[in-house]
Length: 127
Image (tube, rainbow, N blue to C red; front, side, top):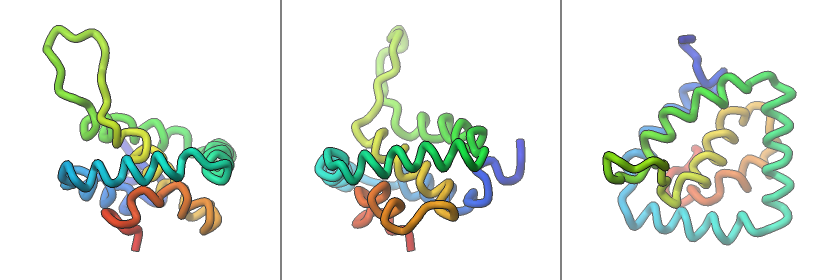
């Protein structure tokens, strides 16, 4: 595996994953509530579309795919050992959006980056 599995933004992505792992229940609930409000907007839908386009145009699909394992470990709900489906915590979708935006933040405009990471602005600032 490459030393930069998430592309040139690997350090930022890894830092976000570490901070995500440390979020408590109250912070996770706040992120989900904030995400639900912003994700329902047309502006967010447009940002999400731009994100997909940027990932594809930049050739960072492998970096995108590399995020799935670490993220899954953090957002997978504990279920019975015989469960046939994976259940995800509600924070999975906002975390994926933020991580993907961080992964290509060097290629995104500021407004798009803010929209895609806004749910975490009070808990994991991009700084």
